[in-house]
Length: 417
Image (tube, rainbow, N blue to C red; front, side, top):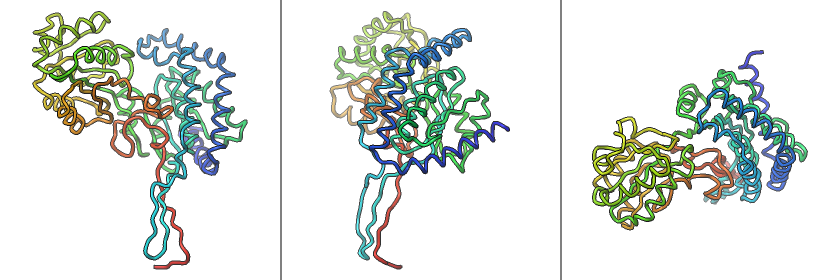
């Protein structure tokens, strides 16, 4: 049997499971999730052993420090993975919620009601905790999930997906509600993203190459978790102490993630006083600085930034810096080079805040806060399927609500047109 045939069978099974799952109550779905959390807890040693195999293999193959960081299930990450399930259990179930309701003059009652999307495929790299996050959110929103992780996390993903499905089945979770495509052959991705008869939505999470490949090949609708070229603009009215702390956090707290800072923009009026100060803080933390001519005039040991630097997602301790004339120039730079992920302004000027908020084209825009908060858990969503940089139908961190669509339910008493 070919890989395409194997993937088609997975899709058929997921579609049947989605129809069964749609009938369960919130109470029953929460029972599935409780059982999943228990199973992850009981299999922790086994799953961490599988993860260690992946990490050791990754080191032998020369994976970058960033990818190894994403791949590793530390005790903290593991406990957060289980805690995320408990958080999702506590969230309001969106399925069946009435978005609006009205009665027509002819007496027809029309309800606009949230329903599951159906079958969701998620294609991702490195992060095995995504296996749990995606599965849990899908089950709570009455969707089934087909997982296609990267080969670097194969042992981890297998162990986690098996624990989740088998744990849920102890409480009656339909078979095949959670499925992992186990082959490492890339043709499986192509087959999955063209399963229009069975898969309703594909969400790719990973590097720019993966996102592009999925988008080009897919015939199934795709929501892109694109790269994070995130900006902080320091306005002339900024609290400079606050600005230094925010910039250090956004760049250094965890540089290998999509919501970390990649480009710093500084207002020309405050640059002579501010830039050497923030540069010293960043360089002492090991950050390589790349600047335009004006920035290098103030911090001479800074590397010259190229045109490519302004649109680069470094995912490392590297930061590009540009001096701009005002908030409008900062917005122009962000909208030209950014990836519509997360951007921040540091300012006390309410007019500058309003201008930035209204005109920056990004999924998440901040005033006086770090871009590192763009995260499903930090937003109170329990977990996330990804951070959409698209505009339809979801944008920003994708939680339970973004995993629903709607239908019109119309009640009559014999009306005819």
